[in-house]
Length: 72
Image (tube, helix red, strand yellow):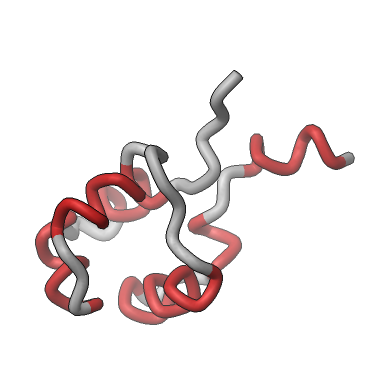
């Protein structure tokens, strides 16, 4: 069963930013950011902190609460 590990797509919408904009800010390929947004792959921890900084949100805001339910 696949779980969404991050809320990047939601946070981008909330901050009125696009995948393309984020890719440019991070110096990443737009396809890579798209994979993060669809939860096909996940950014590294270091990149997650960079994303939070660029979007001016907390790292916690980028992580799905559902991803922790199996560990409680």
